[in-house]
Figure 1 (cartoon, one colour):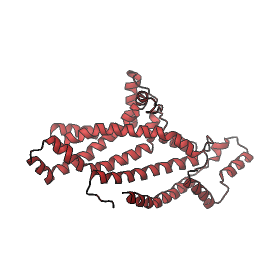
Figure 2 (cartoon, rainbow, N blue to C red):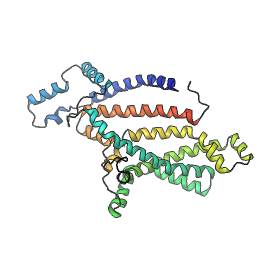
Figure 3 (cartoon, helix red, strand yellow):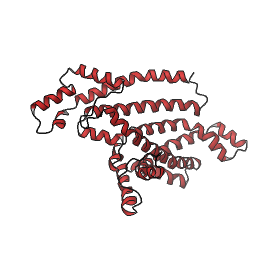
Figure 4 (cartoon, helix red, strand yellow):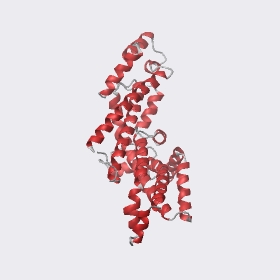
Length: 315
């Protein structure tokens, strides 16, 4: 397994390098310049020239890219043009909030989606299957920003149970306060993703329930609960784990709309602020962080396959 992980990391290295070139080229091709946002509308020519030299924008494009790439390899993405803080420090400050929201949202999605998928698969074509399938379609069809606003109106404005603005509090320092602050954005994201989880897991379960080993297990007298829980569910998890991994990567990489609705201090909101202020070093750092999150979670999903299905051999 260790050898497989090392090989996969080496295979992913060219992906990160090529994507880094794409990130740099994309930002460089964007019209405009961060200089105006730095010196302001009334900046003098001397201030403009000083800012250009400080950012290295007077150097050839290949020199600029090499300087950025050489620093990015060791975690030095330069300094934010707005806060003047190191980009890596700014991103690291937001990561715990984003990870906490992503984990909470995935947990909510699993709690809502897995029972729906199992019940729908066990009773296919029944009224309860149609009702739960309708709920899954509704969860997928409702925009997250609209659902977030409705939850704020209900729980914050009408009932006054939860705060409308979700600040970050570490779960390890104050669990109850962390849940209270993160519940609404996590419920918003979890409700949406539960529809995806339910659909994928239901389809996978229906395929497994038609397999020969299920008929054999039932003929041996195993209870339906054991057939589903010990045999069918485990075999149906492979495609489901892939979807969970993709959603986790998307959430940990930052959820722009939901974080904006709840003013949550995560990576997604940080990226929007950086784009608004043309903070190019911070934009590049955020996008590269999101890329690395997707790459590492995809690797983790591949490793989980071996533990879920012993037939997979990575030696």
